[in-house]
Amino acid sequence: MSFKPVAIFVFALILIIINTSFTAPTYKMAKLKYSGGGDWYGDRTALPNLIKFCNDNLRTNFQQEDEVVEVGSAEIFNYPFIFMTGHGNVIFSDQDVRNLRKYLTGGGFLHIDDNYGLDQFIRREMKKVFPELDFVELPLNHPIYHQKFQFPNGLPKIHEHDGKRPQGFGLIYKGRLVCFYTYECDLGNGWEDYGTYANDTQENRIKALKMGANIIQYVLTQ
Image (cartoon, rainbow, N blue to C red; front, side):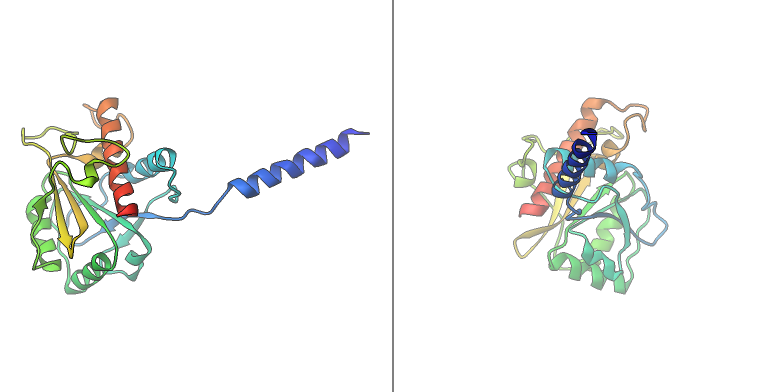
């Protein structure tokens, strides 16, 4: 008959461990939904994989699943980090422009990843958001390349398309990097499930996730 108190004790101990070790997610990540016809919904598995990598390696506490947020929505202010990708056209309405500028100047951060074909459109639309700013290439000694993981040569090249070097551009508002634009890199593709693309390698995927973690660490600590 002695097994009952033991069982009750073990059950109580399990409850204590669960209740003391579990904490609600501190942050959430979202993918930006925009108009214009471009495939904003690309890189479907990218953010969940990046979230897991950051939670495991940076000890962040992001909600495991990413969410979708529209440019002009008030919900955008719920996220410290917004990811944007695609191959095609982008159009920001006047409401989108006002909302995105308010979000970014108020402490938010936008990472734009050109999935090849986005460049001409996103430069035009971000100029509406910050007419006084231009994208500038970040130097190799910028802190975003030197967080937990070291990238002394800048962005890793994840997918090769036309032989150009990967570049990381920024919009800097009053001394703060508010938008990081990764070009000729395909960083988000590198975050996706392994095997999504024919030429995937685990080496490139880990590089992409490490660079993504650097971006997140920079955003949360700058």
